[in-house]
Image (cartoon, rainbow, N blue to C red; front, side, top):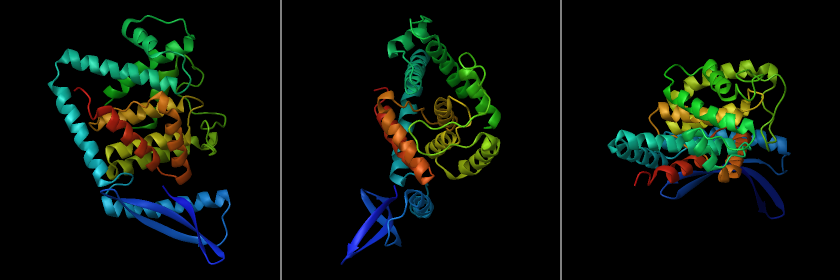
Length: 309
C-alpha cells in the first residue's frame, strides 16, 4: 500500500510517496516519488497517493501480470481451488449438498450479522434447514431467508452481468423488508459506514452504474477471477447505488463472480468485519481494490486450504 514517508537530510525534511512492491519469495522493491519539502494537506495527499498507486499498479502488472496479487499468490490460490474441487467432486451427491447448504447457512449468518442482524448461527441453521423461526425481529428472519434465496439465484444465473441483474439481486434480498427501496437506485445521499469518502450522489448513480458495467467488460479481460470479484465488490460499495443494503448486495455479487469463474465462494466472518471495513476504506483511499484483494486471499486460504479433509 502506498504511504507518506519523510526523510531528514541535515536540517531539512523531504516528503515522498512510497510503495513496497512484492517481488516474490518474501522480497520487496521500494518505489518512491518525491513530493516536496512541505507536508501536503490530507486532501492533497489522497490525490497524490491515488495518482502514485496507478503508477505502482502498472509496475506490478509488468512484474507479475496481475494487478493486485503476485504470481506466487495467484499460483497458490489456483492450487488450493483446484485441490478443493477435486476433493469435492469425489464426494457423493448427498455430502456435496450438505457442504453447499452449510456454506450458505454460514454465509447468511455472517453477511447479515456484519450489518447488525441479531440471529445466532444456530438460529439461522434452524430457520433455513427446518423453517423454525426464532423469537427475534421479523426483518432479521425475513432477510436471512431472502439471503439464502438470493445467493442460490446468483449461483444459477447464466445471463450477462448487467445493471438489471444487480437490481434484481437487491430486489430479491429486500422485497420483504424494504419494499420501497428494493431494487431501486437511491434518491437521497448515503454513506459507507465508518468511511470518510462520499459515495456517488443520487443524480449520478445511473451514469456511474453504466460506467461500472462498461469497466467490468474491460476488467474481466485483465484480472484474475479473485481480483475481478474484489474489484466488483469494492467498486459497487464505493458507488453505493441503493439507499441501503449495498454491502450485502456487493458480497453476493463477489460470490457470483467467483462461482461463475469456477472458484469456491468466500464467506467473510463477522468477527473479522473491522479488518474487512478497514480494507474497503483503504481501497477508497487509493482508488483500487488491492487492500480488499489481500484480505480476501487470506480468507480464501483459511477457508479452503484444508477443506473436506
